[in-house]
Length: 311
Picture 1 (cartoon, helix red, strand yellow):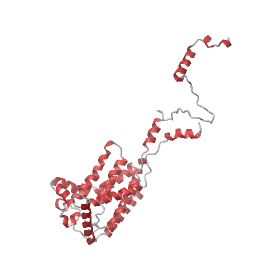
Picture 2 (cartoon, rainbow, N blue to C red):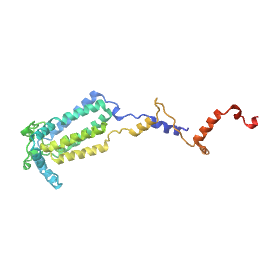
Picture 3 (cartoon, helix red, strand yellow):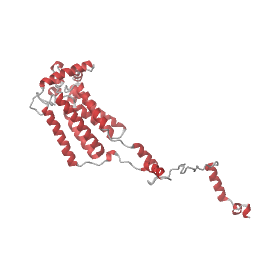
């Protein structure tokens, strides 16, 4: 068999490396890198603080844009949720306690269990956060709870737990960096990452995390709808250029099918033409007739095997 034909048989037998089993980056380097990126983000938010007048003007523009797009009112969503004190307390706790710990836990889990996916996730969340920081600097925005015409309440202050105090231009917590919502952006990214990096039919339930997060940021009056939509738009652009690793499932199945029980390659019949004048031999009798003739010859007596010219 020529070399090209042999390579076609060998190619499916190669076991491609699963992306989740890729090389794990050095732990100390990754820890310092992630901490440095997060510190740079916090300092960037701090630099954008204090633009109160622009923030309130932008809030009015966002509200008018949402009415033009016929989006539901954030105030109506809050009024609906306030009918259940248990629900609003759950949403407050979810908003205050799940966002950052869930991101850290997912990063650590990817690092130890899916190193190939971890590198992809780290770059995606870095570029998503960088894009959000640019908008924090360029588009300061007052959240609905601070935009007085909406008359929405800060549910954290009323029902607990409270996340923010009164706005302070000297505070590290910039309450006017609402556009876009990284609560929504990170939650959607975690949901997508878990669906991509895990197996099983129930993995799609991880998408409940971003859905609950969207409800939480709107019902608690911390974000407009547009804050989450813009975060998802930035994430979509980042994912367009940074695609998640793919599992070569087709090649793996073909490779397993072409191996015997002990792992050795099984021969594959071929009718390949090896030369320009060569024609594959075709037996009109067929394989069944050939096998019957061979069995009859073996059972015949010795004298029956002698042809007339031999006698």
